[in-house]
Image (cartoon, rainbow, N blue to C red; front, side, top):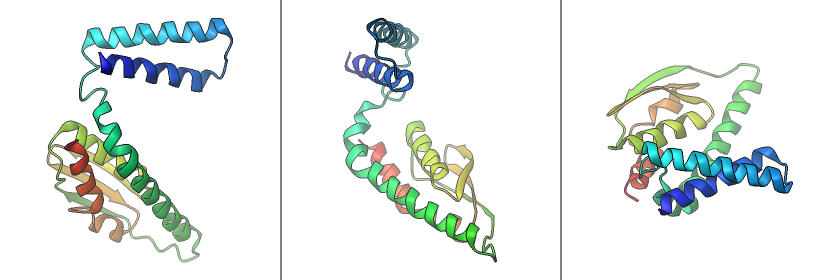
Length: 158
């Protein structure tokens, strides 16, 4: 029931954020639509531990998300510096490595975190194997056993 309420609240907040219209009829229509979608998701069995992982909120909110935001900013700065350099110091590379995560949710969080970080993209993600493309060789060399890998594995345990 807690997951259903959380999903409903998330859907209503997302609808209000995107619509920007706060007339009583439109707010009621948004709440009704969100309620219908939440009930449909419950009926389909989508609102579960993996489909709506609210248990990660307490772990991710204060430790992982701020750290990821810092990494995204640092990588964005590095990519910008490389692009603006007249010599264009890039060395594109592909690297395959074994992530520490065991669950599908952990693998998705890790793969998306790599892709969100400028200069790297997860090309292939399979259980026990990631293929990552990086703008530089240094960006992909440190992925196996990296801080991101360890943090995503810890996030899985929450």
